[in-house]
Length: 304
Image 1 (tube, rainbow, N blue to C red):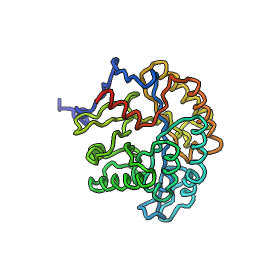
Image 2: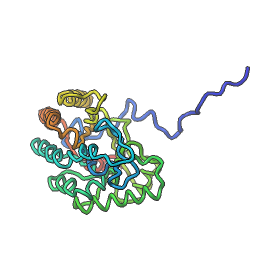
Image 3: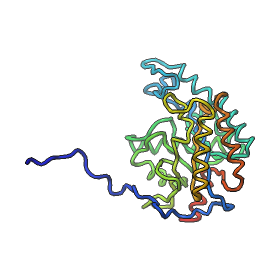
Image 4: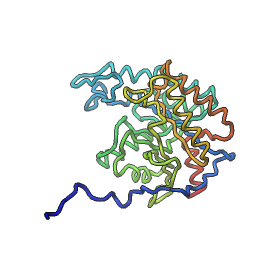
């Protein structure tokens, strides 16, 4: 019989599909907390792709349910603008009311256009981290272009937040060079380009210790988009509360909750965040609500 050739080969041997398994490390979260909770607010308003901003095309994420080609899209731009004009202040108010410190993951171009997007969170004690220059994936990006984008983002956020960012998260897929470039840049403690665990880990084979902090798309207000499964504020809070309670029960875990100013900042959705924060507050010291930079520093102190 002729040899049957199957498409593809084996996965990259460097790909770790085993993880911690049944023997995860004890993070010993501060104060004896059983869970580290990271709230991430994604700041993208003004960094979305737009012909009017000189980009090669308009944004394709269906905020308005349509794609405009060959002409500016003021409808899409208006959807994003809501986050900067209104959502920012509504989200900051909810966090302040609960004494919760978050990480504001900011695109450089968004902050360059509207400095308050970084300055206001920084003034209230939140972390300002880096989310790329434009709101775009880095997969396939030329190395020199990516290096320049990282440097420009660092400089812009540092100028408006009062301190350079120490964390990075790429929209969607990073390039094969992203983590190496972040480490070579020299000032980053961590990146969040990972979705495969409920605990941080140290990046292997690096020239200096670098923490990988996992992020999540399920405990995330992006699921309010069409087909995402969240319609009411309570959909968001119920799902996040279920994840929080399970991880708290297991102990020794980390949880990420993802927010977007233009999404959770809407008046019919903000109660979902408030309900979740009320539930977290009732857990008391069992949950350590921390900025990602603080989680990364703790992990470095424990395991580097």
